[in-house]
Image (cartoon, rainbow, N blue to C red; front, side, top):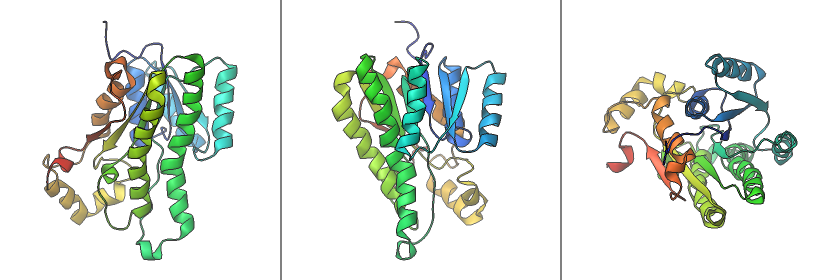
Length: 255
């Protein structure tokens, strides 16, 4: 059967991947043999990320585009079509956070968070899946959820709604695309040491709450998500579909 986790010959598109968890996923898939396509909105961050991957001998390129724009997504996929580049793996990782009580929450902020965290996953996956179906190649869609795919916290209602939506969007993709040999699954990271969580880590009270509440007694590290991403991107998961795998140190297993 060879190496079930070998991604040699595969091309992976990872959204929101110039830093943080997205970059960790990209580096992990590249190390497993995949050619990776990064996405971001900052040219500076993109240049730094590509330089780091290319310095390690990985095959990486990048596109600056808004993941919530159907037009920009189609432009990128059309360029890849013209180059005969087939996306075999998609990791919908792009996301933003916005903290405000619902009673003070503007509709524009609600919509912005849902567009980036949820609608983008639908748009990017749809563009990739249309091509996977057309060429009868199958493929892998990996949507990044959160602990808030299962439970809520105060002041992050749009993020919670979006990540809850990711869970059932993933199941919907499995229901419709499994017949085309496309596996659609999700990863739900726990509290991970990332740029997005920097303010929480620096908040002594919150940091202590994380450590006390988690059975593992600590925050997770970005690299601890790579194994799950490689598994879901590889042939090792060919009969796994519509699942959310939580990488949270045991958080959701406890009361």
